[in-house]
Image (cartoon, rainbow, N blue to C red; front, side, top):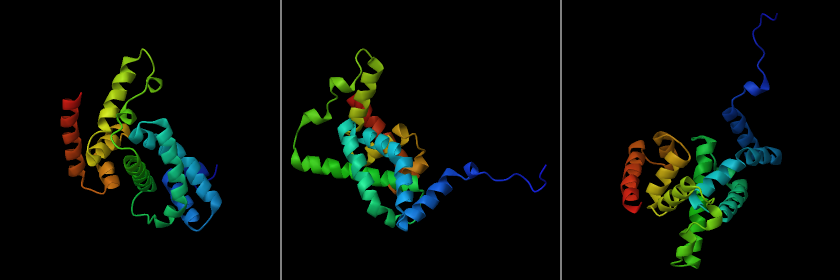
Length: 187
C-alpha cells in the first residue's frame, strides 16, 4: 500500500477547472480546446435558447449564431464570472438580437407567439398548460422574462440569476415577484 496518499486521477479535476483550462487554451487560439468547449456546452446553449425562444427552429438559429460568435467573443471572457454564467449572457444577447431582427422584419404577427399543434403533444393537458405558461412568460417585459426563465426554467438561484443579469439579487426577486403578478392576470 502506498503511504504517500491517494493518486489524483484525471477525473478528479473539477469540471470548472477543466473548462477554465479549455477557455485559456481556446483564447490562445487552440482549435481543439474551442471544439471541446462547444461540445461540452452545445446542449446547454440549445436548451437555453429554446426556453427563451419557445421555437425549435429559432433555438437552432440562436445556437448556431452563438457557436459562430463564440469564436471571436471568447477572447473577451475575462474570468471574473464563471464561464457558464458568461455563456448564458452570450445566449441571451443572441436571442435578443434574433427578436429585434424579427421585429424589424415582421410587425404585429401574432402567429409567431402561438403554440402550434406539432409542438404540443396531443392529449397531454400538462404539456399544453406548460406551453401556455411559457408562451405567457415570453410576453413579459424583458427583465421579468429573463428572471423567470433563469430561476424557473434554468433552475438557478436568485444570486446566480443576478450575476447573469448583472444586477442585485433583490432586483431579481422583485422581477420574479412582478412577473408572478402579471402572469396571474394573464392565465
